[in-house]
Length: 271
Image 1 (cartoon, rainbow, N blue to C red):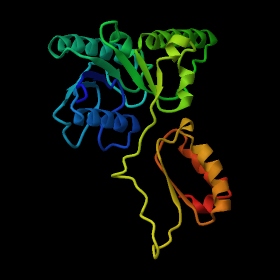
Image 2 (cartoon, rainbow, N blue to C red; image 1 turned 60 degrees about the vertical axis):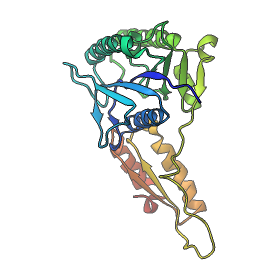
Image 3 (tube, rainbow, N blue to C red; image 1 turned 60 degrees about the horizontal axis):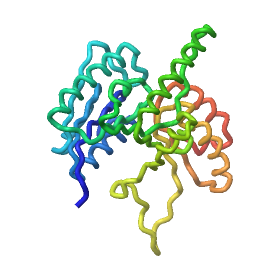
Image 4 (tube, rainbow, N blue to C red; image 1 turned 90 degrees about the vertical axis):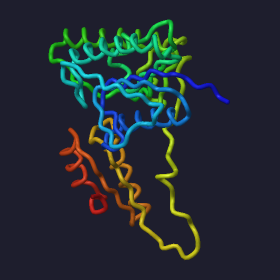
């Protein structure tokens, strides 16, 4: 029988959810649910929670409330610092009772929160680490340079303390320091497909033909690859004239996507 672990999980930002259209929260929920069903004991700290169904009995959720306002998008530094202190205090309190085997910080991993959690006594796992989102740059060159230095130092210290760093796509390595010792701790962990929910129709004779239909369901941000998809889809339509694409979502690139679609050679195939 495989060993059962007691794990402290920190979900420092973005809603922990089993139904909201929020990728980080849904992935975190799947991690927690599957680990709990395998018999591991989990203690989960999170600032924003939106669940329709109760977690598995092995998953103990602690909703960490703060005086500063949490945010789904870009939490303020005062909130991050306050939340980090509260989670550290929570971990210290629970550790005497639970005796944790592992600390696992879910996304986002580069917010500075885990500096308050990581240490030599308990193995610390970071990730999944995703490619970096574009961030606003201060107008002042001096401020921009100082901010860049602070971010690099924070990132280096966070990854240096990690026992393992999980990435879902190779591009995430760009965020991780080039140190050989740190890179050796990186593990590529692809996101799987739940075949109970997503599976192709069985093929067979007499099956009704259908037109291929693609769905893009995500925040309309450049880093999500929406413009790459739209460009590629023009070539898809040339090869498969009956193909269709539906774009569902909202975000800062909404107007830009609309303009791109209106000028696309495949615009009659896109909703």
